[in-house]
Length: 261
Ligand SMILES: NC(=O)c1ccc[n+]([C@@H]2O[C@H](COP(=O)([O-])OP(=O)(O)OC[C@H]3O[C@@H](n4cnc5c(N)ncnc54)[C@H](O)[C@@H]3O)[C@@H](O)[C@H]2O)c1
Image (cartoon, rainbow, N blue to C red; front, side, top):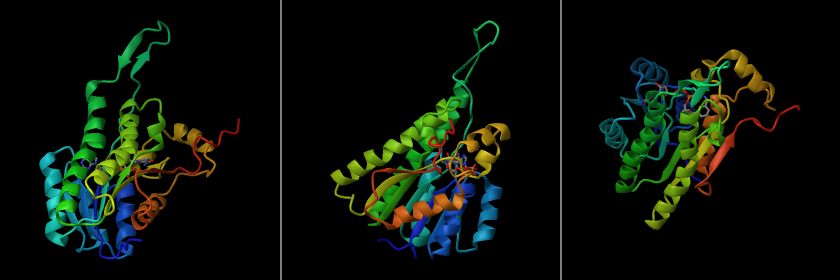
C-alpha cells in the first residue's frame, strides 16, 4: 500500500469542485499539492484555503508549453510526482442535429467549435498533462498513479456527443497506458486507472437545468448527488492500493439501475 504522506499530487482543474475536494483530501493526509487551473482567481482562492505550501500554476491544459511547465514546477518544488489527476474538464451540451417539429427537417447542428472545444480540453488536455507528467515521473524514478476522470457519460448520454466521446476515451486510456508501461518495465511503479462518477454536486452539475436534474435524481437509488469528497476518497483508495490498475471504477450511487418502472 502506498502512503499519501509527503506524496506529490498534480491536479488540473484544481480549483474546480472535484479537483479541490481531492486537494483537501490529499492535504489532510499529509500530501503535497501542485494545483493547476485556467481560472486564475479561483486558483488563488484555493491557495488561500489550502495554505502557502500549496503550489499553484495557471495552466491551460490545451497548451503543450503550459503542461510542460506544470510538470516542471512539481519537480522543481518537490523533486517528484506521485499522483497525476488531470481533472480539468468542461461540458458544452447539444444535439448532433435538431429537427423542426413541424417540417421534420434539420434546423440546427452542433457547431464544430462546440464539439472541438470539449475535445481540446477533456481529451487533448489530458493527453498533454499525462504525457508531460509521466515523462518526469519516469525520468525521476517516481512511484505512483495516473488517475483519469471518466464519467457515466462514457456509456453514452444524449446531448453529449462531445463530452461522452471524451469520457469514453478516459475509460480506455488506463488500459492503453498500463499495457505500454508494462512493455517498458514501468508498470510495477507507475499505474493508470480511472474513476467514473455519476452526477456530482459541483458547478458543472449545479449549472444544469434543475428540472432535468430532478428527473435524473428521481431514478438514482442513492437519491442525491454524489459528493465531490466521495470521489476524492475513491481516488485516494486507488492511489494507496497498488493492486488497482488498468480499470475504470464507477461511483454513481446506482445510477441507471434505479428505474421504478
Ligand atoms: N460534476 C460531475 O457530475 C462530474 C461527473 C463525472 C465526471 N466529471 C469530471 O470531473 C472533472 C471535474 O469536474 P467538476 O465537476 O469538478 O467541474 P468544475 O467545473 O467544478 O471544475 C472543472 C475545472 O476545470 C477547469 N478548466 C476548464 N478548462 C480548463 C483548461 N483549458 N485548462 C485548465 N483548467 C481548465 C475549470 O476552470 C474548473 O476549475 C471533469 O473532467 C468532469 O468532466 C464531473
